[in-house]
Amino acid sequence: MPELADLSALTAPLIRTDGAERWFDLGRDPLASIRLGDALAAILRARAVTAVLHWEGEEEAVLAHVVAAAMRTPRVTVVQERGLLFTSADLPDSSTVALVATRFTSTRTPTPVAAMMRERGHRLDCSITLHPPRLHLPAPQHRSTPDGH
Image 1 (cartoon, one colour):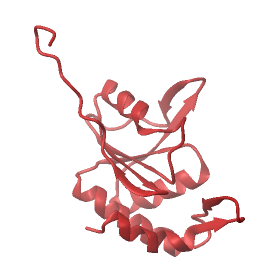
Image 2 (tube, rainbow, N blue to C red; image 1 turned 180 degrees about the vertical axis):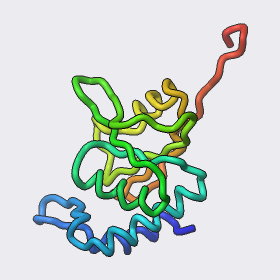
Image 3 (cartoon, rainbow, N blue to C red; image 1 turned 30 degrees about the vertical axis):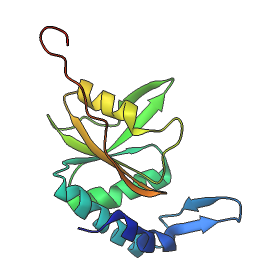
Image 4 (cartoon, one colour; image 1 turned 90 degrees about the vertical axis):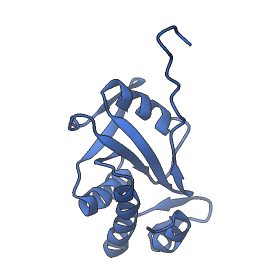
């Protein structure tokens, strides 16, 4: 299974900069994007992920598309509108999902996605970001006992 630290070599051809900012341009080198998708798919396949989620946006969609295509799993967009989250499509019952992102921001984090997935009977197994290359695991959920503790 590829290590996330090894992803830097795969993401390097996809990074653009104007000197002040860096961003991913996954359309810049389609073959490099496919190789990146294959590497991320190997990581998620080993974790038994059954669907790939992504935030809205062109680069996010391309990233999720190449990962989901390599895994042969559904790709679903997470949409945030007026403070509410919803998905572009329903997931199969009891899906184990991963959220892939070029990066997280203060308004786009995995925490609300994990809550939405739990409410719908799914499980967010992990999230992967490209900048920085990191596998994010959700915080364990504490279950209360019948007496409320």
